[in-house]
Length: 285
Image 1: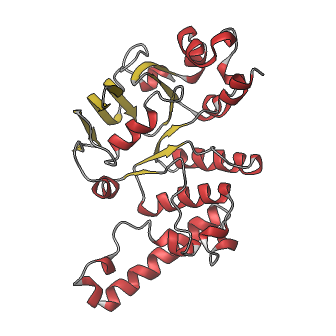
Image 2: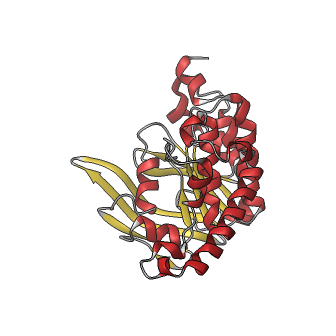
């Protein structure tokens, strides 16, 4: 797998055979704290890449920078041929880079279906002039409603179609956010801790949907603390610590990297990360 993804041996910042996202010299400082200091980072196209690291490593801040929700002190990055440094988040989304959040952003007072419709990036009815062309936007509304219904069925949320999003469980909200992300046919989906707060009964369903994204041709980049999940669905793993990329490679190799194990587990340095979750490590299990 490494030979198919990286050019040469895996190493921090290594070049990829076919990268969809390339970032260089990205830094973000908050006062005297350097939250992100990434020299070079490439995300392989068509693969599932996990971005892991201890709390405070800079993972979510990096997500925010790449997707236009925060501005870097320095740095530039290209996404599928488009330079995105300084580009507003809504424009980033329209170019095909869609993200989810640690805390779900479902609009509680809208129905599940209306939440899905909001995921469409090209609704002609949103424009002032286009809003007067009723036949045009009615056709588009019918089209996106059909697409929303198809995705809701795929994510087993079709029975909740007319329910308010506030009535969904935490896991169902995660499913809704992932389904809504697909309304715009993204090239890259970025998932920030998709398993956080999810009932174990829905965990397998979420895993299957993430693998399904790759099967449909979508690139996936996700932040996660569950090492069992990372090991079993990732094609590539990138490790951050103290704002820097400190390791990357196929999951089996990264999980055995002594520096990575020590950064996560300390006294558990002889453990295999693939068999231990971060929660287990913190509890001493």
